[in-house]
Length: 270
Ligand code: APR
Image (cartoon, rainbow, N blue to C red):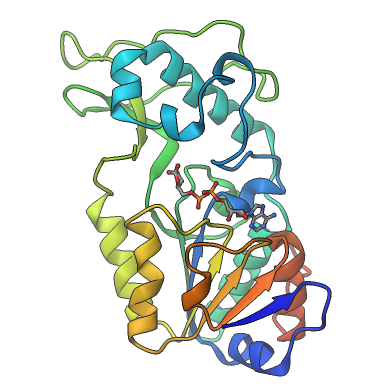
């Protein structure tokens, strides 16, 4: 593994990997949305949730114990996502995807994020491994439900928790966000599609994830087994750093524009 700093010029072997790749998988995590103003999962929380870590709220047990607290947390996070914009990192990936597809290649975005910032930057997402904040379903019968956007101010935590709405398809069910909580199964189609894309890729780029939440963190290992080059973009060391060929230390909104422009990938139109 070679560690590179964002301040040094990108070495030619890294540039060549990006320039020559035709089939790319990008695995993203909360860090890619950090520069848009979305807190990552390991940051301290405020307001109603200051006593809880994100990991404590993102569980079936937390929802069973206090549905209003967990429901309101997710609705508030959704309102925060609605209030922010994609950043340069999201936009670069969309531009790279467009560039490769114009050359009969492809770039598959696989994300652990439940936000829609990749899509709003213009990228097509192959898989949301942990579901989506904007989707809801009944916690009992599983029936999907459409809800209007939350009415919170995304920047100020609401003062009181709000109960989740009841399900219209079964008598006792209440709605929950259609996201994957700790201990729950990932959606098999998204995971299988991600695994297949990695097996077919000639470059895997891992951006903004701590690489500790399984099974998503195991996906780059499929690339490792096949000798596919792996690049990490993250300001800090992660659970996946040791298997990487290159770890570029910096924020994705700075590293991606530099890396892509060094490799001749046009990023300026977005
Ligand atoms: N650019 C790139 N990476 C960044 C940036 C940035 N500007 N800012 C922070 N990071 C990195 C951090 O160094 C960290 O490694 O983003 C990572 C964020 O880690 P987590 O919060 O653990 O996010 P993630 O890896 O996506 O979490 C995985 O855990 O709770 C669950 O389901 C939730 O999808 C989430 C999963």
